Length: 84
Picture 1 (cartoon, rainbow, N blue to C red):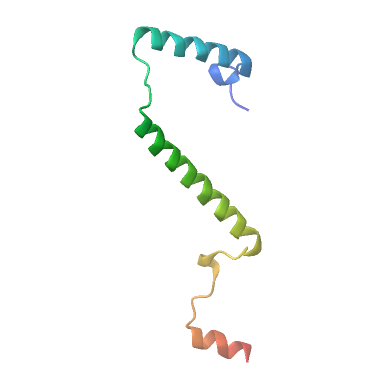
Picture 2 (picture 1 turned 120 degrees about the vertical axis):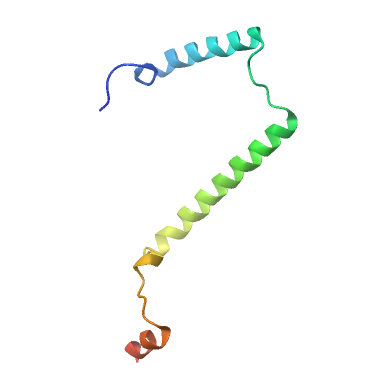
């Protein structure tokens, strides 16, 4: 496993406390980013589309374990003649 240094090695509760302080300080200073309704709408659509795509891909995988690259490159006529 990685080193025991840095933010990621901390307890999740401690991380949240530190991040919260940083967020509050940024808002007080006036440098925090605040989404406009339009920015939030675009971000939500992107996240939803990515989630749907991952879900769709994962549902298709269990039934079709063969990857397209692994399929035979022979012309269709030759593939059919083997089966007959």
